[in-house]
Image (cartoon, rainbow, N blue to C red):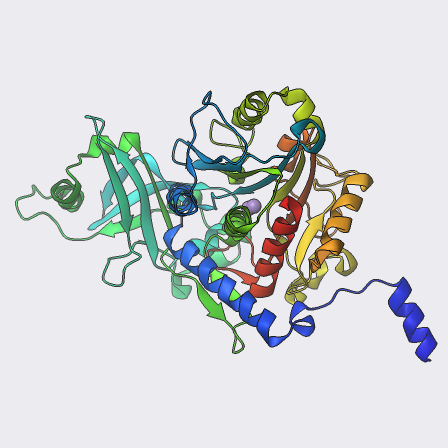
Length: 462
Ligand code: MN
Ligand code: MN
């Protein structure tokens, strides 16, 4: 029997819960890291706020701003600010770039949310509302009847900028999307989840007091405009050059009696962005390392702040040229971890998973060799050789990790930024934190998996 046990240990693979494998000291490290992450979540609820937080942290670690075309030398620690919505941080190493390439970590800092339209404000039946166009893959019914905070920026006609963040402080007002009461929902209840909530009904409640000197019609709207004008100096036309959105007005909290988990808005993908920054800041390495915090992943990575823009290529080219190499030679030997979340196996919805190839909670950061859906359509598929290289790296650095794909075949699947980086002739594989209730207003991750992701990134860039 004992021999059989040994053979089983030697030949078979089992996922292990990290909390089963760590001592008290390591558990304290895991929990301590989670505190830093929760603070980051609470200040970084949009890509703009995450960019500000990333730049402030980079400066504290001695990084200085980089402009395209500037000279670079070994030892430089730089950040590049792409329009306040996407950030690149990099350290120029001493290892030859034509042999070692650049170690790239890429995460995204945008999350599903409710964006305001450019003509948002109107009044109906004594209430003022904002019209919205949701951003990313939301399940509309999840965003009703709960407190929302308003975030973003308004560029006024004179070019001056107003930053908005209302609803996160204890005494702030919050905002709200109405839902139907059960007493009147019999007809709606017969519809499917996908059709029961009309996107044009996702209007945000922002006021209810008519302006005293108003002329009746439109005076609640006028009162809201008057308040905004007194506070921010804006008029209705200024919404045209604004980017405003509503996100859940909750801060990150521990979940469970044992505090094993973290509930928060926007784990996807700040739960990879935060370990990415910490790994780049904290890891001593001779490699050239580049961390990308991308925008627009949730809407297809298009545009000049998305991962499909030329900017990644431009920055690789600039670093290569400055160090005396061609970008083509450097890209061919560069390596990337596309850092994005994956679906954690949820025993309440077993039917949508294939358990052997699902990410189990607290079993570590999870690697997906390939993405795509229905016959791997739209896949980025890392080579066996590259996955082998990552396995070896993780084994040498005691990284607790697992492998998974997103849901069962012909049901699940999805894409990340991996393909856009792989298309540049860079070995790329997906790796990140398993998430429960991904894209919900309040998502759940395991503290152990967050820390394991940090350890994986650190090992990769060492
Ligand atoms: Mn994501
Ligand atoms: Mn997502």
